[in-house]
Length: 267
Ligand SMILES: Nc1ncnc2c1ncn2[C@@H]1O[C@H](COP(=O)(O)OP(=O)(O)O)[C@@H](O)[C@H]1O
Ligand SMILES: [Mg+2]
Image 1 (cartoon, rainbow, N blue to C red):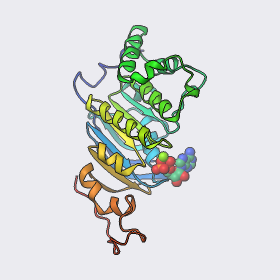
Image 2: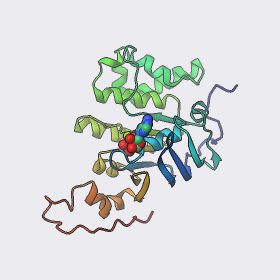
Image 3: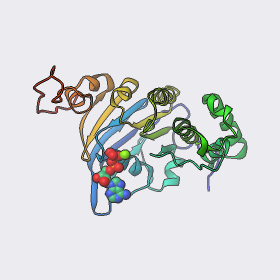
Image 4: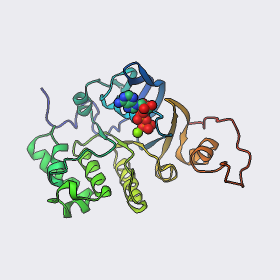
């Protein structure tokens, strides 16, 4: 079995990850959440927006192999496996909602777990890299993860995912429950990771801030896409403005007549 150094796998050296998702169905038992979903995740930072229960987490779970899926998913034109460990080996990592750190373990120990697929020497190298990328964590290397603030824990969770040297990083609501300053910091980290060449797919509730850092966005409602496009255009679209940025609401007198139509923004 090939456990060491997943980096040269399938995706060649400088090739950035892109996902093509075609006719994806996923859900829980007989309950289908995502219906015939078709979208593309290009290199850079893509944000998935949408109300609670829209299926955003379900999408990330389906792509990570945590739940079953039907339909076509291609990672750089090669079919994505369905087993979680094989998906990780193909270079995909998920930072799930709620972080799921080991609270009784130190920051270093938590990070080392993220490098479980690689050799000891490589793990040491990546840990050093993680501390370079997240200097705040170096100062806290020996602190128990459970004693850190929410924002610091989220940072550990992202750094741990980066320990697997992913080509595609999935973040599920990284800013959930964080103070505004910490939200900005986490979103800036996501941006930096994307700029450094790892494709980022991020679910976010902070619509305005997320669209400010993202390259592209998709809006999911009840398991189907209702809008998509470049983040800048999406931020100005009626779908986003009315549903998520407060424009057109009853208490907004500047926009008394919101349009009923919800046209998709051209990609
Ligand atoms: N483990 C589960 N079992 C059954 N239904 C679930 C489960 N997790 C989520 N759901 C349902 O799937 C739908 C989509 O949920 P989810 O993907 O978590 O939404 P989002 O992340 O967009 O808030 C919701 O109706 C939710 O109740
Ligand atoms: Mg969710």
